[in-house]
Amino acid sequence: MTTTTPQKLPSWFRQDIPNIEKIRSMQKMFRSTGLHTVCESARCPNMGKCWGQGVATFMILGEICTRACRFCAVKAGHPMKVDEKEPKHIADAVKALQLRYVVITSVARDDLPDEGAQHFYETIQAVRQAMPNIKIEVLIPDFSNKWDSLKVVVDAKPEVVSHNVESVKRLSNRIRPQASYERSLDVLRNFKKLDRDIFTKSSIMVGLGETEEELISTMKDLLAVECDILTIGQYLAPTQLKRHLPVETFYTPDQFKSLKTLGMKLGFKHVMSGPLVRSSFIAEEGYRECVESLG
Ligand code: SF4
Image 1 (cartoon, rainbow, N blue to C red):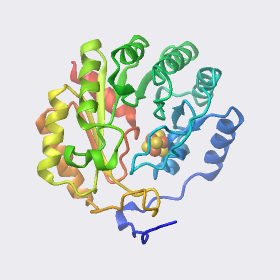
Image 2 (image 1 turned 135 degrees about the vertical axis):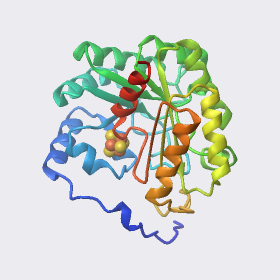
Image 3 (image 1 turned 90 degrees about the vertical axis):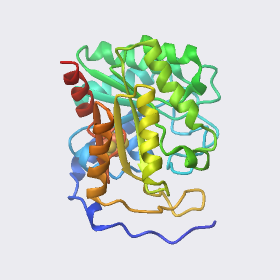
């Protein structure tokens, strides 16, 4: 197996010691019902913080992805059989955690005719039934931009639909060979066509070799499809294996602040930008700011 030399993280990545007991109790709850979280599967660096506060992002449709993106820690390969009980198990976990806001994502399921849209629908419905006042954000794969699949998700009425462009246009094919920058923009555009009341959101990872001009163009492309919320975070290579791209640059906290200022100036309703920012990190804040922006 070919590997590269591990990269040392700058000092600003240091974090407080997590609440291990809380993390263990959440792990136990998820394991007992076969639930998956992107927090664990994607080796998110915020697990200590989020799980310590009883917040997790659920990953539905199994833990094996049909795509093999070069930035992602989620396993790729032959996908799992869809668990019909999963929507109920997610709803039970959300209720047990007493969440006010939940983010639900999934692996890509190119093997399914609707790529998993109906399962999203059923999961949203089950969560709403269990917790009528909850706000729901879904972070979806591109569903190959199939109109019918996008519509199924919209019909379930999540408050926020998120779909990540992940990177600037020039690097997109390299880091997501089975996806496309334009298609991701089309997905976001189509959600607004389907329902103008849904807030849309996207994320960019930095440190993969992009330029500032390219980041500005990406922000403008997202605004052109009426994307409301943007998150920007530092790319961290999930492993040193060759299949994962190495970090080209570590942005400083000040550079992240500048990107936030820039994004807000360009017109996003909310921008969260920081070394450890991930799409689902303190996601409720973005939704709240969007609601407030409506007056
Ligand atoms: S940022 Fe999102 S994925 Fe990471 S630990 Fe928090 S909830 Fe999980």
